[in-house]
Image (tube, rainbow, N blue to C red; front, top):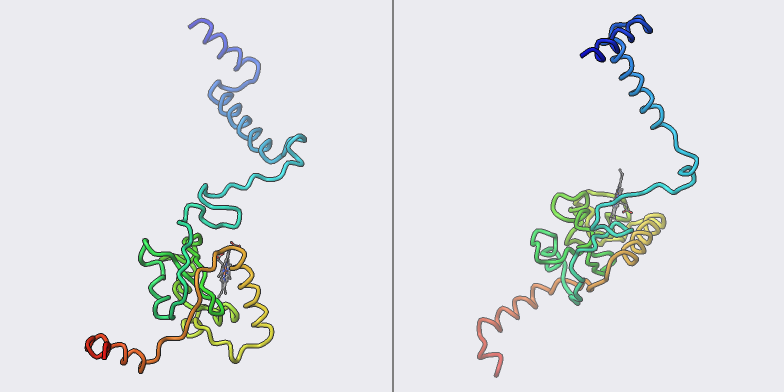
Length: 195
Ligand code: HEM
């Protein structure tokens, strides 16, 4: 107790401040010192590259390394492609560019439900990419009226996809209605098939 009151009296004697005011000022000075020091880099650290931290399941290209291995799916129609839109977690997410189908499951954070590019999942999206458009009316493979510049943009996208994702199939035209009707008939009358 004697030491405590001697120290408090000494503080008041030397600084002219009450102990409370003295410790408050001391604390504030320490905080200012810490803040100012944090604004500078030590000479040893000056030339070190910044440490970029990413979620542990993302590779350098932002692809999810935990995504299942892509499986070759061969030919499919736009209607079939639509079922690979990320709504079924057991199916891969596919995107088609110029009729080439890519497994973009590794980019689920982009194309999965709620992702910024979910509108492209399960779709042929060449036109939208060429025009940098998110309009549903542009999410198709119609390139007819596009300019040279639009096609160059599309080509850049294509390179990006070739580099980042695995091509797993090709888009084929929808079977004609006549063909479907014919198949339906065969299914309904399987005996006729053998005639
Ligand atoms: C406001 C404008 C936009 C911003 C700020 C933006 C931002 C981004 C960012 C940060 C990425 C990730 C880049 C990377 O991983 O390399 C990305 C990728 C992408 N963006 Fe955009 N974007 C914009 C507009 C667009 C438009 C207009 C389109 C097409 C219609 C588009 C389609 C895509 C696609 C397809 C990817 C690739 C995702 C992948 O790697 O699979 N973006 N965007």
